[in-house]
Image 1 (cartoon, rainbow, N blue to C red):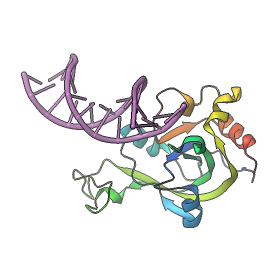
Image 2: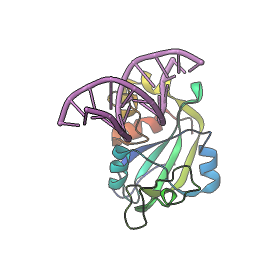
Image 3: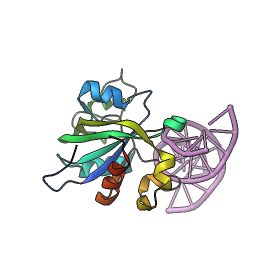
Amino acid sequence: MRYTGRMAQYWLLKSEPESFSIDTMRAAHTTRWSGVRNYQARNYMRTIQVGDLCLFYHSNVGIHTGVTGVVQVTAPVALDETALDPAQPYFDAACTPQKCAWECVEVTFVEQFKQVIPLTLLKANPALEGMPLLQKGSRLSVQPVSKKHFEEVLLMRTE
DNA sequence: GCCAACGTTGGC
DNA sequence: GCCAACGTTGGC
C-alpha cells in the first residue's frame, strides 16, 4: 500500500501484544486507543489529527519486539471512557465525565506487515538515526515519528 | 528474571 | 519545592 493525499503527521503506537496485538487490531478493524496513562503520551495524543498514520509497535516480546503494521487515525481525540469505569484496569478515580485527564483517538487498521520489523534491524539502520523509539530510556507509548523515518520503516517491510 | 530509566507519590 | 522511596516500562 502506498500513502498519498493530505499532509499527515506520523506517530508510533506501542502495545504489548499480550494485551492488544496487531492481529487483534486487524480483527477489530477500528478501535479507540484507550488506556494511555502518561501525561507526555497524552499530550502527544492531543496533537494527533484525523488522517495521521501510526506505526504499530509490539513491545516487550523479546525477538518479536518491533513494528508490525500501520493504523490510521479516524476520529479525533476525546474522553477516554475506560477511565470512568471501575471495572476497567485503567480506571482512574479522579476522573469524571466532565473532567478527566485521559483522552484517546480512534484508529483503523491499514496494514499488517508479513513479518515484524524487529527492533534490532531498526537500530541497525543508519537512516533511522535520531528516531525517538531508538533513544535510550524511551518508554512513551505514543510518540512522534518524522515523515522521513516513517517512510524509511515502510521501505524495510517485506509487504 | 534482571535492572536501568523514567514517572509518581508523599513526607518534610 | 526537594528528594527518597516506590512503581512501571521494556530491552536484554
